[in-house]
Amino acid sequence: MAVKLGVPSKGRLMDKTFEWFSERGIVLSRAGAEREYSGAVEGIGGMELVLLSASEIPRELAAGRIHLGVTGSDLVRDKLAAWDSKVSELARMGFGHADLIIAVPKVWVDVDTLDDLDAAAAAFRARHGFRLRIATKYHHLVREYLKAHGVADYQLVDSQGATEGTVKNLTAEAIADITSTGETLRANHLKILDCEPVHRSQATLFKSRQAPWTDETRATLVTLRDMLGLGD
Ligand SMILES: Nc1ncnc2c1ncn2[C@@H]1O[C@H](COP(=O)(O)OP(=O)(O)OP(=O)(O)O)[C@@H](O)[C@H]1O
Ligand SMILES: O=P(O)(O)OC[C@H]1O[C@H](OP(=O)(O)OP(=O)(O)O)[C@H](O)[C@@H]1O
Image (cartoon, protein in one colour):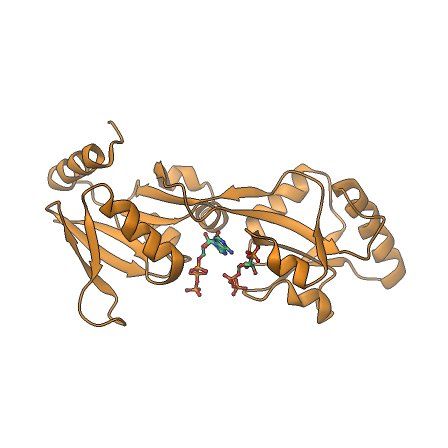
């Protein structure tokens, strides 16, 4: 049986992942046409490449359908409850850096910290009769973080994309989303709260604890770790 390696099927994460492996002597490539989601692995035997959406890789790892997977550390933590009982981190890959942050409208001049947000949320509820809405796709991480910091009077609204636009569109008062350059936040007149990010994410190579680790797949993993300089 081959070791199945799941890699994002498009964009920056795919390109950088291919580069990262190739610098370590393992050449990953798409098989066939641009839109075909299977691939080839050269430079090591016993491995198979599976191209998947970055956001599906955590679930595939947890289900044991892939042995290894590359995706953002944010997605694994958000999508898998007790993530470290299902996967382990083999390598932080040094790209795909982005911070999961909480942002509010720039015009909220009295709101700079989580304490301010908490106060604003209570005032918002008293005034409007419903809880302040924070738009995000990172439901678990954001809930845990706000709970740990004593912010309670809010509701999460789901946003699977263009999250920064929800404030202008009046479907949320605040957002929690990934930022790297800060360009999207600036363009949408939002400011980051002055606190630690909810999570500092980067592309990470994960190992599934649930995948079929036979003598054969374990032996391939030993060779791979060696080539990647990961030790035992
Ligand atoms: N602006 C950014 N800069 C760097 N990394 C980012 C940025 N935006 C998202 N990411 C990271 O990329 C990963 C998500 O990648 P991508 O958007 O390709 O996934 P996806 O949600 O599966 O996409 P889709 O559903 O469109 O296939 C996350 O780990 C996230 O932290
Ligand atoms: O800080 P910046 O460099 O501006 O990057 C941040 C943006 O990048 C991501 O969006 P993406 O392009 O993945 O699209 P999405 O809105 O569909 O998630 C993220 O959700 C932000 O919107």
